[in-house]
Image 1 (cartoon, rainbow, N blue to C red):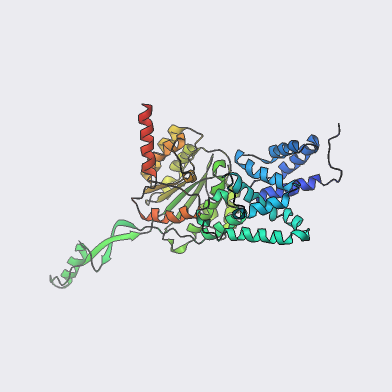
Image 2 (cartoon, rainbow, N blue to C red):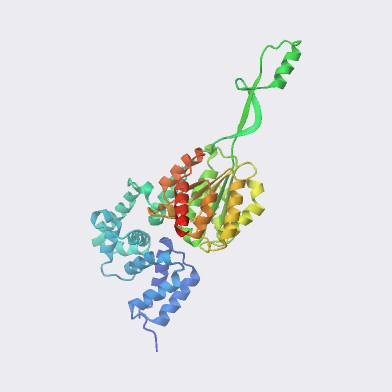
Length: 421
């Protein structure tokens, strides 16, 4: 039986255009997947829309959370008769006066943004009757960044343009380093400590006459910053943006950090400090992407922390460094190992601040075993899902007593343990 394929011979081109639109929407699609999709659609046939949908979905998607964006992209791209109406509605949600599902709305905006930036834009431009509509839609998208809620918008819900704007804002972020008080002393005009050696030397030069008392105070030195960033599949919507944040900190001359070290981890640990040292952020992240293994893969937090503690801890934490642990805590490995290694990390570092995007949920509770294992061994627990939370991080770094939501969640864990007993 010969598969039912359109006679115009443009099926392959349409699938290629569709794959490019998916990439602009944030779904990683490679050349091998495109070839596989073309062959699969030829084999399945083009008579049933549902068959084509599930065929392309099986070829292009690697994670379940991508399904919402894919469904919107498929509906809009593959000749929806109300295509322009949907595009207008998604680009201007405020004019509709209708509340949308919390998951469908960001997926729809992401799909519309990706299509307007690619072949969909040319389709609209070819129709003079819709030129004004397309212009209005683009203007509506552009004004989203200027909205008062932009800084509180979840990175996961941002369109491609909004993500680019957020990264431009992040490039101007500062994370001032609180100075450390050293045990070494230095000369000073005033101070509670008497510099006995200098005072006695001065008196000896004046035949025992003590004309003045010299003072000294403890030295202040700049601390080090160590960042451990989770790049597993569950963190994909946040890890790249947070790496932009780390790059900005590393190249901010007036931040006050002595040295900044950056590591990524998923199933393996990788030191990306030399890559982030590149001045241009795009070059830095491209170099990091080429050297890192396990992007969008699984999570073995305990094993990666063990590798860090064994290989890198003495090198980068010996001067009392502050540690930023960026992860959702969804461990798939040995929980006992995670408890052991996180405890060791806390003892070695001056302070451990855990940034977890899952804290964005109002009803968040420490139910996952990885989160329950990590939480007692960090000093501060905060969210990192939008620009506002990253800006507030500076205050948490300055205040050593700031614990974020750590104590509240630990109390919840103790209550749960009491109920179970």
